[in-house]
Image 1: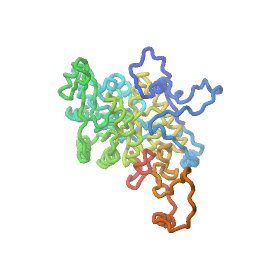
Image 2 (image 1 turned 30 degrees about the vertical axis):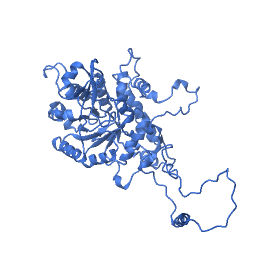
Image 3 (image 1 turned 90 degrees about the horizontal axis):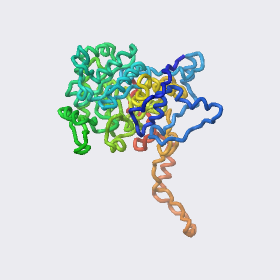
Image 4 (image 1 turned 45 degrees about the vertical axis):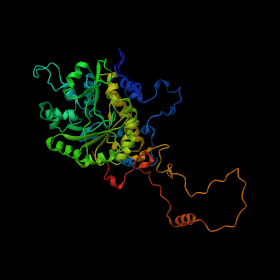
Length: 510
């Protein structure tokens, strides 16, 4: 029987939290970071005195508005019953997953935080340590070395300040169990100038990861917080002067402001450039896994297929709902595809697909997995949870999410996340249901008879004449045509749950 280990409930926090996350369910995440699995259920003290039912539907995005729909007939549950010689339970759901060439105990990974102040300090180190104990991979974001340097702190390194990147890696290695998890290091244009991947690949500290196949390099082409732009951070005057040699620094906050905007370049990509980059990564770093991260661009399906064809071990798509970094408000609110639409455009993946964007509980995770993702990333949710409790907050949050995953996957009559499929979801109007009949987006029939005008006097009936040409053609077509088969909506019909097509190739693989 599967157990659900969780750390003891956290004591009340003596000081106010350092982080805030407007527009994100921060309080719910903090409750899970304090309580763990009990936060999945209503307050047990109200049992017997309160009638429980659905809460008012939250607005949410397209992914949140989809409903998870268990079938009546469950052949996979029967197979599991025969295999176990008993009725299956939700604890029989196996959440072990292959994530970009790694083995993870849960279909989760820690998303990249980058070089932002919130994501590159002590909170990130605590998050890495807890992710290691959970047995899930950690992605270390771009610009860590160009901004913070690559130093081996202590007497041996000759520098009392330890590298922010190395601090996260060392915390992870100290706590990681054998055989699970992994470290993924992003590289952007400025990272390439600093030869980050060369540094890591030749560093003896990374040898345990290379020897066990638990190191990956991720080529970053964009991010959900600001599609089409590079990384941005706020720096003070002294730091701006130091970074101006490697980054663009702009005085956008006014001439008298003590702060400046540090901008990284996004990089330039075409199909051929992407293929050459991936070929370079595979040839020069053969012991490291190869990942690619895309922003939610309109051609995301084509980009993902190009990466997989070039040998990428994983493709990460960052939905427009995602982002822990600094970005202009117009980008946060108005730029990029929502995660559900990005997944719909990718369709059935031909390799490992990873998804991030507003994930913090099991329902959203299950919907992303059903739409083709092999695992989902925790970004803001992870930072908020660690801010609530630096020692065990992320572990409790992940424990609550894992319990919800087991309950939901089992309710669908399935016992692994990889078994989830688009038909496990239903999209309410105005998003068309492929089984609901005619396309709700179809326009009016141009040949339909007009409705009678109630204000006009009826005309005298006339002898029937020859039918109009279009009516004759329509009648003939109706007589000869087979019964209609309602196909799933086309790509222009809106973000309904995708279905496989002949062009999609084989199903999801790790």
